[in-house]
Structure formats: C-alpha cells, structure tokens
Image (cartoon, rainbow, N blue to C red; front, side, top):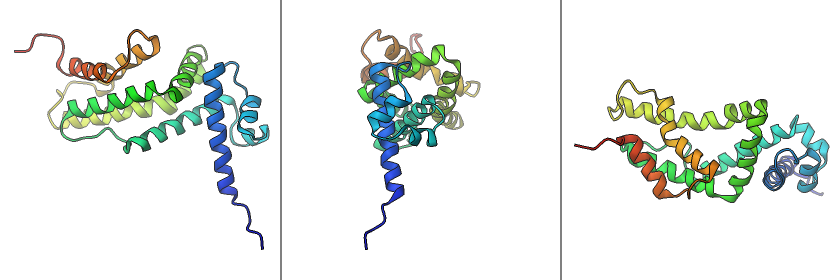
Length: 201
C-alpha cells in the first residue's frame, strides 16, 4: 500500500520556499515591486497557498525575517546574549555576530528594502519594530540589567537607552555605508560606550 504523503513536511517545504522567494525578491526588486504573485511564482506554489497562511506580502516578509533571525540564532547556538561575567567580552561577542549578520548578503539586501519601506509605510515599520527589532533589543536589556545587578553597570543607567550606544552605531554605519562594518569597529564601539571618551586615570 502506498504511503500517505506527509502533509506537514510538504507544508514546511512550501513555507521555506515562500520565505526564500520573498527575501530574494525584495532584495532584488525592492518592497514596492515585490508581489504575492511574484513570490508564489518563484516559490512554485499557488497564490491561494500564500493567502491561506498570510494576509499580505508584509506579513510574509516579516515572518520570513523572523525565520531568518531564528536561523541566525541557531547557527550561533544561542538565543540570549552570553553572560560569562565579563560584560565587555560578551558585548563584543554579540556585536561581532551582528556585524557578520549585517554583512551577509542573504540578510543585507532584503533588510535594506524593508528598512526603507518602513520609513514611508508606518504600519510596516511599526510591525517590523514590534515583531522583529524590539525582541532583539530586549536581549540587550536583559544582559545589561544582569550587569547592573552584578555591579558592572551603575544603578541609574536605563538599559533600554544604554543598548542604543551599542546597536545604534552599527545600524548607522550599515544603513548609510559610511565606512566598512568590521569586527574591529564593533570592538571599538563597545570600548567607547563602556569606558567613555574622557581620559582614563
């Protein structure tokens, strides 16, 4: 007797093909020119399959980005910023990983397209922040709060503001392409943010 097709496996293959197609298309053509029809054709599925799972191309792309982030976390083997007891080393570790991710062509082109669209499309921008960016930033909040408890960060510091000293410069250099985004730059950002610019005694 023939074995029944595994619908779960088939659905997962289709979902993966849709995510890959969406990210590739938005990277190549931009968000505005990416369509559900184009995603379906590239993924080799029917439009109805996409509309059964997502209400819009924005929803597809956001889920594709969340999936890409999950893959990156799996590749680096961690979902939280490490807490080795050495805040500087832990931050350098995670910022170097962020540099690698931002320099990865699979991430770079679609991320730029979505970031640009998010500026002119407030709804997409808000979803991007809520579903993707803010959860990632909360990893820094938790690590900096732990450092406060350990006495490595002064009590009055707001972790949600402090984290922007680390991620903001990377985002600025990546988005505007002012200078190369490197591990050495990430290390310097951590050093300057943690120790300031004033002469050390």
